[in-house]
Figure (cartoon, rainbow, N blue to C red):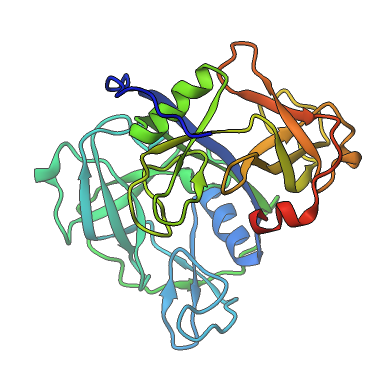
Length: 324
């Protein structure tokens, strides 16, 4: 169904804060384990390559030859700034709450530079070639944040080179969880603003490409295939067909949904591609390709909370095979 209303007034300009965050958990190999455990013990370790270079932070394989690297060495906690950029407005979660410089520091004994914060009173106090040293965190747990920051240092480079180190420590760190977070203010464009207004009326509205006739839901304002603007609004659904799906067995933090549950690609009737949605109202092991579903709206009626079976016969594969 194509909507042909009278020329609308410009839609209300929408904006909202958006936060994307997740904990990234990884296990550590012997080299990274030794490096992070060393920071906890106020020891900076690098790794020696076959051609004699010392890499800090250490890596497990030579970036030039791909050879496995295992020879650990200790380097000094002092070094030299090789390049820097001033950060006048620190964001939450950054190393310092006051303005500081992001700096690449080549520690004495190392051949590569380490990126970290440099505490300085202002950009005029920072220069390439300046001497700095590590300021250790008061509490250290085996993470890069055990280096609180770098600070100016008047001393000369150490005469001794990197010293061999076994990498052995008591209670070694074997894994880390690093939080990743991105927060910003999102302002949808013309196409998505109309789409969101449609959802507030419990309607799903896409836009048709005038060239290939594909209906995009959610609309993007332009066809990524043909490169032309999309202006014809098309109401699709509300029912649709499950094209593919996955069973989620890991409970997400702060998400009040019991596992296992099903997340699916759903091709709404009249749409030219599938969108994502959770499937409810049916045991997870009975969800299947071709299942016909309909939306169950959120309590405030602003978006579909999930999709449930309609009770119709399953769709024939040929009707949705191009939307997989």
